[in-house]
Image 1 (spheres, rainbow, N blue to C red):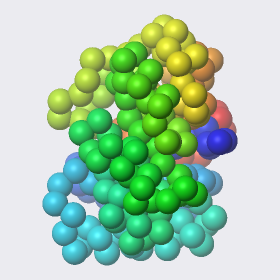
Image 2: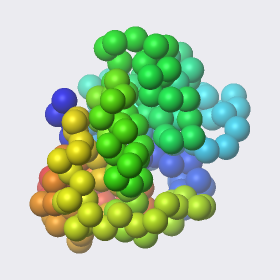
Image 3: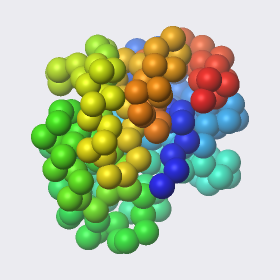
Image 4: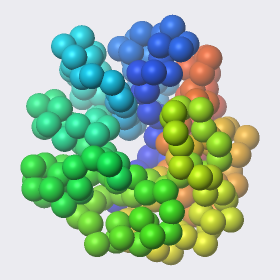
Length: 203
């Protein structure tokens, strides 16, 4: 499938650090032109978090953008959203059983073995990273690097999303190394609208 080249991730921890509202930031990204948006929340998915996700889902529908829920296939189903699962989440095969055949499903990988194994999973895209050092995760996996991304790209049987520490400055070399899309967390801040507009011009 064709993914947008710019794939912003609305990470609730990053939003708290920058003292930005979840729904307002989502609206900023969407009005800037983002056509896919992932909601990533690593804590307890309480009622307030669900309400935020529900409102972001509505904004994405209005904008004609794809809304992706990270980790939680149950929340994705409730919000009629796409889903993204990681190595420690419900396996993609089981997620697909719940999601059905037509819902967009992504899967995180961090090395050659995981990327090769992902070829046997019923997914629509695979993420690989961190490409560079990242501050958006407490215990990140080892850096993949651009050269390794280029070497591993042929193993991807679906669209490949590069993630982890990629900035507007390094994006061209990451795309050139074979990434179909780049997921962005840290480089959205502090000026989200400006960052999004610049990312979209690059892509």
